Length: 336
Image (tube, rainbow, N blue to C red; front, side):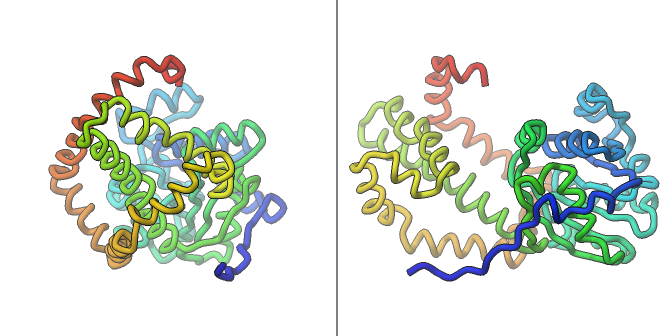
């Protein structure tokens, strides 16, 4: 039985009031994937944009080559009407404290992920508007879609509205990114943070990669060639993901064979069963109650020993060795 859902409220270009940010200097802190896309799109939309980076930061030259003058975090924040925190999650609390004296009264601070606000790693000053604009795509896609006259959908949230215009300013910012062309969906910092972390851990990164590796190992343990196992469990993932991305389950079912479809419907639930579902609920609970965030902060502050060990295990795995050898022969991948 289909569950009834509320009709979503999607904001589009006609809902935006770009003038809500007119005359404001926007400080973009960070110039990674999202930072670069935000800065370029906002500048091309007519806003004054300054870049804040650590002295000697590795993206300084890239920002300068794109025509920006690079400042320290404090210099960029000084006098800015809106400050966008687009550095990695674990750096933001320190940067906030570093720039706080330079943040003018009644300014707006913006995040593309709610982690630090939701888990109270940053407790914003009471005079500040605090907003969220989270494009649902990587920075290079945000930029490419903007240049093509399209836009990547965004999530929008308001944590603190002192001015009474926080949501309007958030929507103006999303409009400057091109987000209102794709649609902007209202959410909260909590919902964005918890669902984003869950998706990454249980499905997109953690769940999918573990499923691939264990499927590969099952075939190799049964005596099949590692190269064939790689093709079946890793290489062809893109085919299925592209179909799901373009048209959901319906398009996948339309384009795979009847044999594949029958195997999907009958064997899929044997692999991802109620036990797996319960594990997913446990992952979500640890996200909701702050256990994951506390563990991650502790790991980061201790120098990432377990993180680095687990990452190296992934990189040293047999499927990575076999995959690298096979991909080296795929000429079409060398251009990407």
